[in-house]
Image 1 (spheres, rainbow, N blue to C red):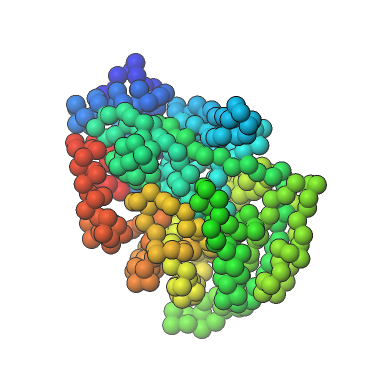
Image 2: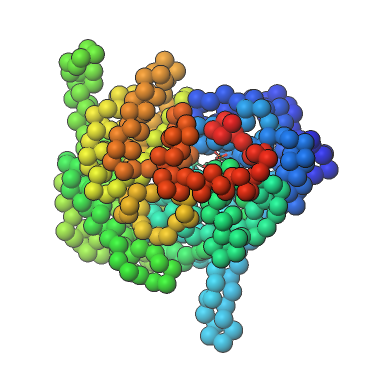
Length: 468
Ligand SMILES: Cc1cc2nc3c(=O)[nH]c(=O)nc-3n(C[C@H](O)[C@H](O)[C@H](O)COP(=O)(O)OP(=O)(O)OC[C@H]3O[C@@H](n4cnc5c(N)ncnc54)[C@H](O)[C@@H]3O)c2cc1C
């Protein structure tokens, strides 16, 4: 490895250092070689060479996962940044002129920002785009992909029509839920363990030009959760089997209000009183603005803090400000043991209450809650018995001397998550994953998960710090 004709090679020290960690800054890898294939054919050639020569490969998008999922311990990093083509496909039925199908085909290294820019002029957008638009399409689909509209549309992987994949064995193919479904299901939410997505074709939805957002404040957790379930209301809908809700975006936040320093077993600690925020967003055309009373009818909030409007495309990028602030403050370079849990809705209050008590103050606030629609998802994306709530602890950064304690707390939280029948979102900090922990995660699917690896990557070429 490598054949310079098929891929760009970076062996600079700077690049090697950059890819030796991920956004978590908790796992240290070591890789001197970074390859950037330009298309599926180059990808297949690389995988075939790796099989022949026994070279471990780790596929990497932007490295925004946090448990070494995209970190190589002793092999070659295969970066997807060269797989960038994006094409919108809009087909009309000749007899009626109606839109028959609308999709976008993206190279797996394309970012959501690039996809958004190309889709916007067509009047259509991918159903679910993450809050961070700089993630790659392939990296997101390898985790699952959720967003503030997941109460309507579920995960990003629920809207994939077909994929171009190169398996660990080096076989290149197109797959979908109907054609080579075992490969399709193995790579969506599959963390690059069985195959590499070269490109993905995603369904598109029409969008309205503006979003009106209502910022609501709650004093109690129960009405806050009840209102989210109510707003996310799921009922039978159109042929795309998406959930129906009268609002387009829904994001809950836990907000701390510090009331001084109180006595605890470990000395005086910040005394946190929790409040809860809810952002409710509705897309609209200027000719038909939303009726506020209709949207907010029957909700139990204490205060409507703010109503604001934005263009839908600008709204999709609203988290840029947060990420910019993290970079400016230096928090981006700190440790990020992020913990995203999928909870059975009936256990959400119990679990979130425990989490707020357990998490030390340096985890900050802003823990998020999203509702997850019951759309069909690939079989190896583990979720609790539906309906589910996503609870995400996303500290801006944990100082180095607090990391050992922080990881201990998250291990305890993980134990409690299993007890309430929850599942982890696999891009976050997972701790030490043993065969027993994978078995717990995959449950009855565990033998199938093992079998797929054996069949699709028989020489165990695809590895990472998470799958050494
Ligand atoms: C600031 C921030 C904001 C985030 N916001 C969201 C959000 O709103 N919604 C959400 O769902 N997630 C979010 N995440 C989590 C994010 O989805 C995952 O970390 C995602 O996997 C990262 O994408 P990436 O391009 O950096 O992938 P990487 O971290 O590079 O890769 C992730 C995993 O996918 C594998 N992989 C990457 N590309 C491919 C491919 N082409 N084929 C097969 N396997 C591949 C890697 O080997 C690895 O196992 C966020 C993360 C951060 C740091």
